[in-house]
Length: 113
Length: 112
Image (cartoon, rainbow over all chains, first blue to last red; front, top):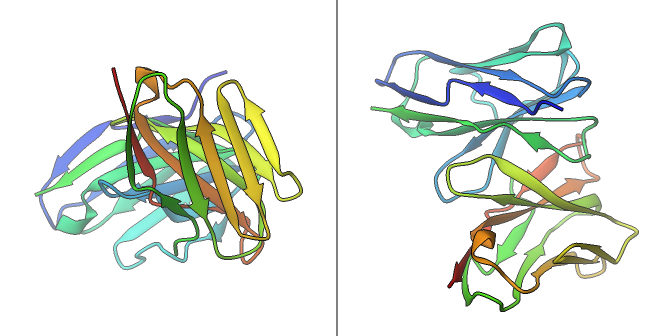
């Protein structure tokens, strides 16, 4: 069974630029998550999708972050414009349901200069 | 919002010894999960324990859950160098949306 795929693996941008991350979850998983993980901290949930709909985006900085999940499968997370404090690893995960085991992708390491 | 708090923040032991990490949380939960993260990698699920369970085993891992104290522990027996990683607890709170909230993690180092 293929795991969660993410791209790119690394990205370096300057502040005020925009960036987009892509995630392909495990086939059949209805729930998809985007987390932000700052060095030395635990993952912080940015947004959770159930199929096409948003379950929770309470910690998503909506003035600069946006995410979508087209056709209930792939998802993209965008930051526009980026700030220095957005430097982090962005993790995508998927699961069969909200409370169940989550499967994580390798993450995208973002550095904002 | 942070639900789980791991203790200690860092732990260093000799290979072959047992490692114990603790997690405390604040609200009633559906389940509690433990994940491992090797440096620079994604998280890997280790074990899930439901609120009506008290203990669960998986290989060298033993997890306990005390819902009255709102706490859990992860025991790794006969540690190996490959166990060096960060360990996170994640709680599925009964309040709000069905999601997991991760703690800040315990950094475990196994010395050869």
